[in-house]
Length: 266
Image 1 (cartoon, rainbow, N blue to C red):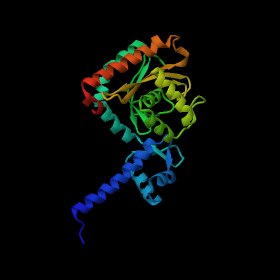
Image 2: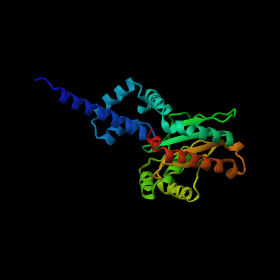
Image 3: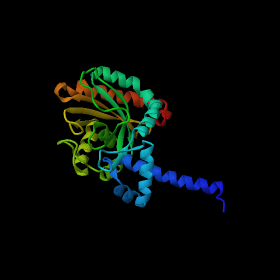
Image 4: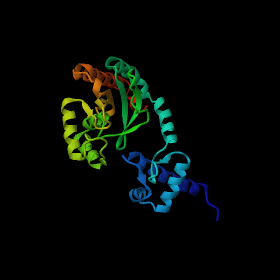
């Protein structure tokens, strides 16, 4: 019996949804995932997960992390996303203010948007320092160990932030990284009170960052900015050197978004 076009369409949609579910699961994970972990989280049979992972790996959308038989996002997916971000209305609107912030602080600037349980850099402006940072556009970073992540969490309604923090998987990146939701909650409460966040060598040794959220027209956070400096050259007056220019930049971008709300999703 011949299969109708509508039946084929439904079958194709179901298969595509499975692929997307595996990709989203890997993207949201703070660590590479193995077949067993993917199967458990999705409820798919292991043979199905094997086939999906093999197909995604063949298209370079997933890559094996070392020889661990665990997978993380691959270069093709990052390349596709980077092309989208390069045309992002939000990024294009923010870039002049971010460039001014880079020039005022003489430090590296990151502009990040939320993506599941992570933040993703959609812009990076390097300082003129001879020492460059390894991050790049398209990098996915943790909410709990970065200034942009903590700034975003602090700008969310408290119940939403608490639920998100409880769902995170915590892994130590340095000796300073917070280890659980309770410790992160304490930091986020402090950020909420003072209006800006820090990454005190929590994501990478020797790097100190200051962050703040960019609010959309409805008052919810749509992005976050960080000023990243090397610890050995950090200036003593952090308020004048980093915090004040950072908060001015966040307000300037928020004003642009208030005038043109379509940029939030552009």
